[in-house]
Image (cartoon, rainbow, N blue to C red; front, side, top):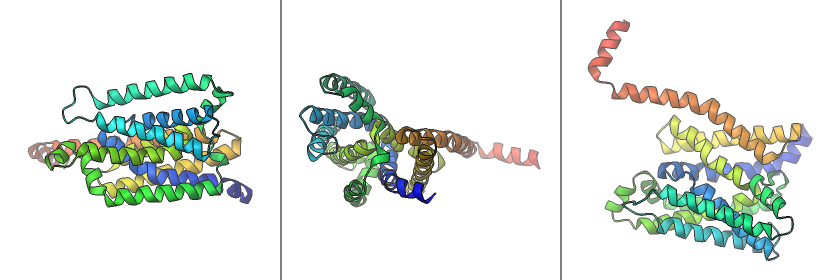
Length: 293
């Protein structure tokens, strides 16, 4: 057991770091109803990493990270500029086609690289089990900086996520603040894809946030639930990976899916029942109460 804890310490710390920032950002993503923006940014960051690889920069190197971050920043600019107050087409559609184009370009570029298929597989599944403590510490600094900026600007970001029309009426430069949000988002996605892979990043963003949102409407409580779900799935997935020699990233993703079903469905039914009760006319509630008594 001690050997397992020693081996899994750095991967678990990296997972908890991703849970902390992606669990929070995932709530924003669901509130904004741009579910695939994380997947699209992750794929764009992966495209940048593949281009860097073609140019001779090894995965994890400063050059590779620079190409990945540059691509993610370009994606942030695209998503903020295409955000319109009165949409002609849904923003999600533009995000979706951007993801498809980035995926196609990644395959085309990787086809020209030696061992390109293996590199694509690593970008999808990640290599969380081999993460080192220096990488964890570096990413901790980045996550802490992004978290601090979000804390300072939380009122603007939360208002734009929850009620963009109110943000427009309040005179906020929504596109500018969207660019800031997506730029920070792209920075987080860049380091997250490097260690966790696209599948894990998308799952960390969406699965815990879904459970949190169906459980409550309060931001603080949502954060606590998202962090708890992500931490539990990380511990269970990594242990299963160590115990049965499974790929670590996909094992964590499977655990997130299992917790989403086990926790999300009962909470969704419970909340739907509360909403129906709240919308029910008072006279009907009184008659049901009398009938029950």
